[in-house]
Amino acid sequence: MSNKDSIDPRVRKTKKWLQEALLSLMLQKPFTKISISEITDQAEVSRPTFYLHYRNKEEVLEDYLDSMYTIFMIDMQPNLDSIIQGKMAVKFFEQIADQAVFLRSLIDSEVSNLVLNKLHKYCYAVIKQSLSQAPYPSIEDTTWDFVIASIAGSVYAMSIRWLEMDMPHTPKEMGELTMRLIQPGIRDVLIRSGE
Image (cartoon, rainbow, N blue to C red; front, side, top):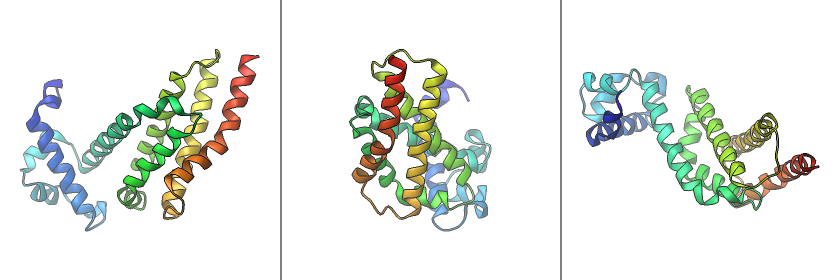
């Protein structure tokens, strides 16, 4: 698909219709039982139109998740410089809570690997952007990558468990718990690299 297509409002509108149709159908039946014909009927577009934009229904879902996480990243921008204060962690859990019903349904579905992979990549991207904003002592790139992966993995695992447990704590409580768990490790790496 060309760059022009991604800007064209008709393309965006058609993709939105297809995504909404798929999401609507997923509330009614398992993802594996949904056909392309059902998606196109629900979206009121032709089958050839579907194939102009997507190869399969997995791409529709992946495109929707990408757009959801893009919105999450834009929403997260004002909080990226506050990783140590914990505001970023609270914001992350607020975002998860806002999409809890949808995310939980996907985690419990046949497409859970796709969803979990996207969520993990989002966690990694948020942590990486946040840590790159602060003036930390010179730390080797590979060490930074392990720090980011460790924090992202922890936040990711906690968010999945939180959803599975039906969110027994508020986003604020989860953000604060996350920071209590990861702050000592971040401080230790920063102190040791500054020596």
